[in-house]
Length: 230
View (cartoon, rainbow, N blue to C red):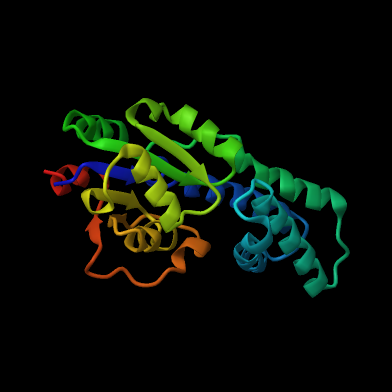
């Protein structure tokens, strides 16, 4: 029945949120050493990072900018003067998220290999900064498994349809796999593709997408796809 699968990248095939969590904790430690409240800084940073998508999108500048802006806002709340050295240290800590390779999800390579062996066409549709996403794809070593790889600013029904057109597969014969309701499930449904949702760790922006309903197949991890496509 199924002829193709369109995969998400971040936190579906490889883990990125733990890298952000690590960088966030490093930035928070810098803030706390300047005698400011780390909990309040993190609240401000998380909200600012969601708000900044509107004008910074998914560029590599958004997260460091959000971290610094949260520090500046916290200084204003606390009546403390902004220390440029602290702001620079916060930004440097935030940028470490882009320096480390994103580890593969367990069973990612084995699952993709098994799906290819079954004759399924595979595509990777991932969003974000093109240079960063290309580096993560290269570091993952997964590129040879895919017939099509696309990096986009936002996942839309049109983007999904375009990938399927390259695969020469009709939407009703395709699955999509991702961890974000907002970026994976909603556009897939709109494109007429059957979504498969892996309930994984996502950041606040990706949690705002509505409830997963009966039209969505839920799986615990990647290797469950072998049952879905059996």
